[in-house]
Image (cartoon, rainbow, N blue to C red; front, side):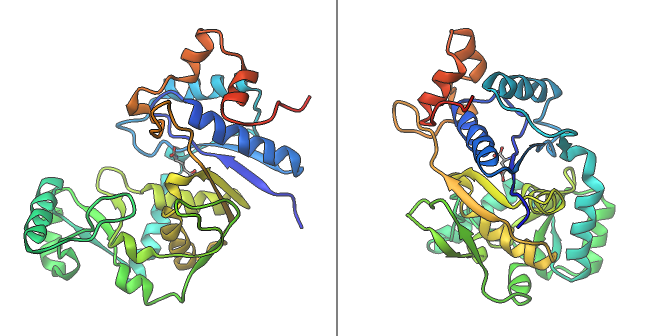
Length: 294
Ligand code: GLU
């Protein structure tokens, strides 16, 4: 069996906090313990939110933690053509369609549906796509595109499910409700999920499965908040003939109040902790990892 390949895949849209430190160190430790490889991947497809200065800070913080990684680092913004090819394949297979509703129009449609009764939400709590872009004629789509309207390319979930059998994944960690071992994927819970947008011609889901396969990632180790996204990833892997890695979702580092740390919630950044005199050894201790191997 070839040595395992792990990766830490942050988005450079803010500074790293303790939750990132835990994920990066866990991946790094697992790679070391198994004689495997640790990769750093920069997930910067959203040019409106990602900044080179944050990428530089990520590298500096990881090096400070004692982590090193293989170079060159894969930066997703440099590989849009590869993701576009994957989306074109889904399109050729008749599995995606453009939907032209704005976010505000979608919110109105959801409100109208909810006035009639409960409307389903995805595992992240967002309402499923309520529109009927799937049934629009090619002529209507062409007119809207020519008019320069923004659009989202959505996966036709019903058609996609018709192409695959039941899907599962190997979970070496644990899901939010204790799921572990062989977990059945439930991609239908996401509805007609967005694969690309006019302004960002790919999505997290597409780029992540394409890159994990291209980089030979054998073990995806990431936060439990992405547990159910794995359902979409398994579906895309199947539709695009990509191998399925093993997954290990880890618990999230919580703040004193029990809330998930996130950049928006003003979690202290690693650099703030460093400036306040915290050492890398103390960071390991705070996130519950054993001391670094000499
Ligand atoms: N880029 C994602 C994030 O920063 C992580 C992707 C993954 O590990 O699959 O949340």
